[in-house]
Image 1 (cartoon, rainbow, N blue to C red):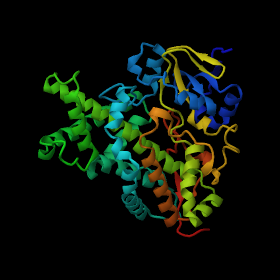
Image 2 (spheres, one colour):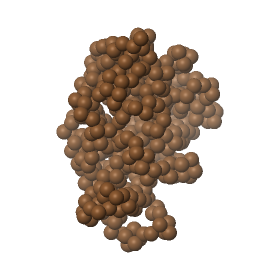
Image 3 (cartoon, one colour):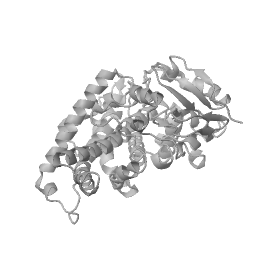
Image 4 (tube, helix red, strand yellow):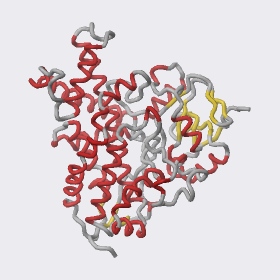
Length: 431
């Protein structure tokens, strides 16, 4: 017999104390109706098995523009990144989802991502060489964890080097939902204008203007997206007959959609992963990893599990009645999967908040989601996290937090869980 989701009032400091609150929610069934701090009512899933069910549920939809549900509209307005080009970014449903994903899929194949490793390592070494490592604390977030993924994703897209800093600032403001709405909207407009100017320049390049399927693709992803999206719009019966200006606008929308997906995965997630990997380092784990770098990959997976940089899966909503465990969820309700809660479920993971370097063959964590919406940038995020930590420990094997972990300020957001600053002490020798 199913029942409505029990109502639970989340405290104002929920995001700061989430891992203290998850156990009581799981013990009470793992599916609750909640209102998040700052607004937004949803069904929150905290049980691992039910989280897997929800993530793989085809009846759940992600495009808030395709429903009249006031709850979905309000939740989307409160929590989704502000974008100026398309209010649906980057949440799409089949068949549009598969079409959009296919436009960039070959940029994130195992072979393509593996080929990036030397360049990621080079960027990491350059950044570490520029850090003045003395007795004074260093903000590793600003000096390393942020500029590394910014530079990597900008180089993949083809953003000029002189624009990397501004580009990263816009993206961070858009994706960090605790920023004021007006600030996020302004960043979204500026980002959109910049992105479309870059696309316009590419359309004017002779090699792109005369490109045919027999020609090699451009060396940057924005150029490839421009070619593919322009071609897709021209071939689509729904848009092929439109005036040229409208066809370009439709292609621009597709380019922006895919670029935003890549930025969410390739920048904010990776930035949080690098920072969180330092946050969880104890002296014992640090020394073990410095002595055995081959264990870093396993450690990164544990960081993803224990301190997921994306603590909640992005918005989903019901289009038909859905049963999760003993709870019946009616149509038109927002469903939020607590990835951090599921990944620390003691029914699945022994001693779930302890880093276990023997968890390689254990149950799979859900930090990157599941099913058709599995994060397309997961391989790149893993690679950058592994390379960044390996380079950091090789250069500064005695790296340590310069403050108690509980004193490090963190984001209070449904989109990200990572430090706002990361004060560390860097020395080249173990102490």
